[in-house]
Image 1 (cartoon, rainbow, N blue to C red):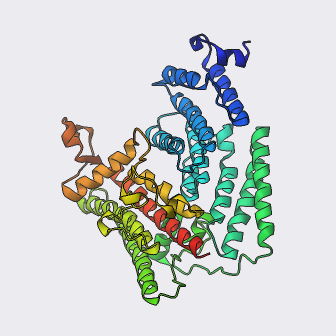
Image 2 (cartoon, rainbow, N blue to C red):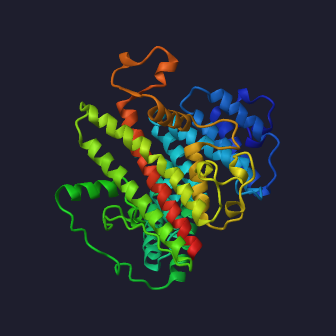
Length: 457
């Protein structure tokens, strides 16, 4: 059997089996992680794997290796917003969009697990937990075996956003339970050891909080009939503006609890900011209710499609309105028409400029999460290419705002002209985008409220 080091240093990778090349690449990545010096042949072997696997079900595995390389490169940078991190997130978004339902469960679960881990580390724990829910059950799959423990890791990070002692303790108790029970399902010794260390951190964080009665704030749900059905649906799809929705979707009090209350001395400004946030919450709830009502309609009812279009189109407005709230909260004094979520972060509101000090120098992890979240919606300014799902999403929204989008149900209805196809989407795509955009609007408001809460702390 050829030594992995010999394989890595070879001038002809074509003579080796894919499994051998994959193992040799992992060895080089481990060396890179330990020594902080990038092996000379790492680029060559990853490029070879990408070319050799192109068009095959295992192609994403080569991209996962590249993303690991980018992650280690990023660790060596002082800039938390490095081009390496932007490229890494872009690659994961593309894999998640392009290979859903097109690769074996073992490959898909690797994509989800690694993507979730990266999202959690940049603060987007809400989105990381959602990605984990997309994994496919596969009992002997090493990635799937880590699902519950990784959920615990995500909740541990999520707990850092929560300023209430009881809320934080509740999230950490659930994180500890998932890390402990999840680790027992992992057969790989290195995997078990990893989550054992993370379990110790969860316990340490709980010890620092001290004794807390996590049932003190519990209030039962007294909803009945259709209202109960609606509230359960909201909780199931993580559409409640309530931090407990991530911790215990089934047992949580199914109410929207997101509030902002000003504590400064400028009362007039405080009244404005409170009314602004209340307005964002009310607008989101209206879109969410419209979505629920639309999904209840028969699929043959033309009103269903139009209501879903309206939800999709209008939910987008909450992204820029969230940015407007930041504009007023941080006193950025940006002209209103430029204060969109895509541009508000940059000097002179231009994506090619440096980040403004309020985000560049911040220690506020939720504010950084909102920044990274905006990249999924509007794209990565430091990336040479953009995610097709993001481009498609913005294109459809623009068509709905300015022109017309036809909802089709049969292959025969697909237009021959590429220009006309821009004005078409399937019922399944419409429903998926309406749901996912509402979920993203909810997460934007959650990250916004966490960011403001941490600033007040």
